[in-house]
Length: 75
Image (cartoon, rainbow, N blue to C red; front, side, top):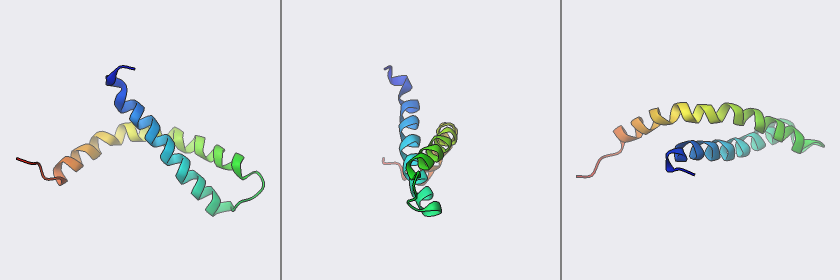
C-alpha cells in the first residue's frame, strides 16, 4: 500500500477498534449480558463504525492543529 494512504488506514483502524470497544461496553451497560448480546453488540458496532470513520477523517486535521498549538515546539 502506498504511504499516502496511511492516514486513511490509521483512521479506519482507530475508528474500528475504538467503536468496537465503546459499543461493546455501552451495549453491556444498557442491556446487560443477555441472550443475543453478541448480535446486539455487533449491530451497534457496525452503526457506530459507520459514523466514527468519516468523523475521524474530518476531525483529525482539526485535532492535529489544536495539539500543535498546545504542545511546545523544541528549538
